[in-house]
Length: 248
Image (cartoon, rainbow, N blue to C red; front, side):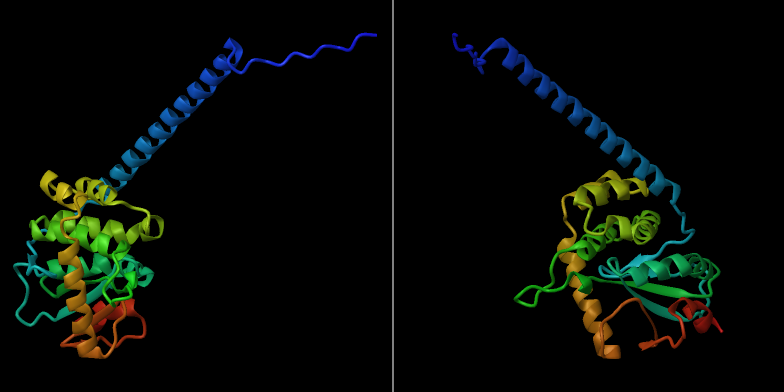
């Protein structure tokens, strides 16, 4: 009885080549689908940011470090507080959600003046005890760009979005993502390009260092969120009660 013969396929045969092209085509289609999904997701995100746009109704000031929110009709005896916050701090996000609307209304009414002091201490420090560049610094750099260019409506909107979406975007966004969000918030092309290029990191980090030192000098510690009146913490049982406390 003769042994059965076995054939071995030539890997260079047309059949193998066809199979290879099928794989390439599938991968190409998958890449296109992923690209479309990413594009649609970014478009949806931009729409969500645009929907949160706010017109402040007054012009804040920026001293190169912090934004001071004061309406033209601010009363001479309106309490002026310093709000210290870190874009990586979930308590700061909670506070913003709970009190931003009331805070803005009281500012518009001339009853309150608020200086927003960004911190980046939650990024930590390196072996040389210099600040790391993480999410806090990236977010602070993006908002600093808008403040420096006098685009305060976009600044307020972007700040609100960064707090509102903090849990979703923490350590996920690139400078390009921050720039796209800023653009959707109403930022100019110039401001968006500056954010994308990371031009405001140094300024944002230096501001945060200044604010951390200021906070420690006045209170003995650095944490967030903090609301200070006359250099002292506003005494409340819950931080979200600070507005009522300073206005009473």
